[in-house]
Length: 386
Ligand SMILES: Cc1cc2nc3c(=O)[nH]c(=O)nc-3n(C[C@H](O)[C@H](O)[C@H](O)COP(=O)(O)OP(=O)(O)OC[C@H]3O[C@@H](n4cnc5c(N)ncnc54)[C@H](O)[C@@H]3O)c2cc1C
Image (cartoon, rainbow, N blue to C red):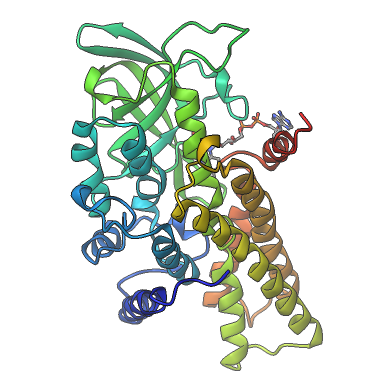
């Protein structure tokens, strides 16, 4: 499908802004920078230009634009490898979730800050013994005067150390083995609250991106419960469709391919026949995957609502984008690595640095946001096979 004509101008503006920022050295680009590159100054600059929360209603700081306008902006940010991790999760799924399930007071309190690129959220789903089987979460919230008291541990919490809030999935009623998805709720937890400890987990490349978040007798006011108590599973799964379908599930390693092609064009590297075949195949696959991600954005723009079958659910399509897209991202890193044998010509170059990031981050691509095995199960259910 083709994007509407008016998005051409928008794409040009974003690209010019990024080219200028890269040229001046005011941002540092890399592969997988939508999760690894935290740069609040860039997030605020994007917010000031109206390029965050574009599809949110105007009264909450958005522009009332379509999901396709947002798609164009996110695609340019990802293709450039811009460091957008500070605001990414808040803008992609938390503000939309608050707009869908939240109270008027919550919408007014949280959404404009997200659109300005100033308010950041982390995802509090996984726990030490609950990942794929998310319904088994054991973090508990008990009712107390004026709100909830929360105890438990979340893990693999991306960028919690630079976020203001955690959107936590918690158990508010005891587990009923016959109705495992019931009794869960979502709480918006202030990461600066008493009883919250954010501990770093250092990745194999030495970066601090993950955290363990320990919640010990944390008081959460009633006003910070999202949606309805007991409806957490439905709310969470509708959020996952937004998390899974975006171009970041296809483009995380595009900066590596671009850096390789740029080095060839600049005469810094030669390309033999096999190199050209590999590049051609990668670009062909990329074009197909991009169309799939774009098709989901078009469904969202047309009013489809993730997780709501009455409004054209896109849960299965989102799972397909992520399953195929994340495999592609990893294979891109592996194929480029094979074509670029290490040696003096590569050592210390910009290409070598982006290659190292892509290779070291690749193991996480098919895990984050739900593993590919689990996504295949979602697709099977959509086909009526489970
Ligand atoms: C880079 C990265 C960032 C992340 N960021 C966050 C974050 O910000 N917030 C957050 O909450 N979590 C985050 N996660 C955690 C992620 O969501 C989990 O790792 C993922 O859901 C898998 O859970 P697990 O690690 O417990 O593995 P498990 O669920 O224990 O799975 C282990 C293996 O068993 C397979 N398996 C499990 N169940 C099934 C099944 N039913 N059918 C077939 N195979 C199955 C899995 O596919 C996997 O291969 C992140 C993970 C990564 C890698």
